[in-house]
Amino acid sequence: MMKKAVTKIYNAIQRNEDLKETFNSVLDILPERAETEQLLGELYEVLKGDHRLVEIVDLAIEREPENFQLYSYKAFLVGKENPKLAIKTLSESLPLLHQSNDEEHDVTWTYLRIAELLDKTGEHEESIAACKLALEYYTEDEIKDTIYWLTYKFRGEQYLKLNQKDKARSDFLCALRHTRFKKDIINKIKEIDRGGVNEISTAK
Image (cartoon, rainbow, N blue to C red):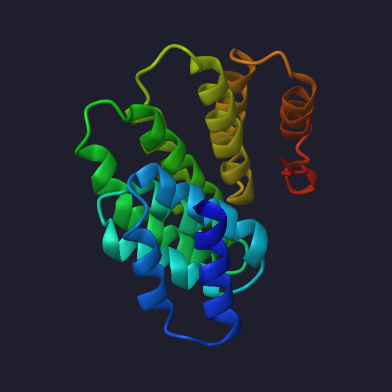
């Protein structure tokens, strides 16, 4: 059934047929939401790089506006070429996670994704604010060290881009407490201590 659904949508695109009508007719015969997400994954392999894939995801969101994973997927698709749209998509979908009682993990990763996208648009202060929210909403212990390492390291790099080396150094020290991968962070701290802030690499 899934292969037929993918083929039907692909053929509709090739023939320039009404995509909304075709997509909805396909979804009407798929019984579970999980199959909607699976369908989008299958379509990604077929339509990779085709702007119509984003249009299809928008149609899925129109049908299932409470499904956060669809917004997340759209942000993934558009993030490279249009980070502002990805930020808008994720920001508008955050209330869906906040309304849930068991989605702290997704909230945290979503704020981190927004922080990375804001870095791409040069909005470093806003990126720092998103990192702060990621830390505030994280409550699980299972991967605490990973979250803290990534967030403090990334926020430290944002501070460096704003030439706020004291705050950057503080965040890098926090990151050191939560990772075995210390060399890169130690080198950044040494550069700060030598006064070479402008020469510090902020590559991830």
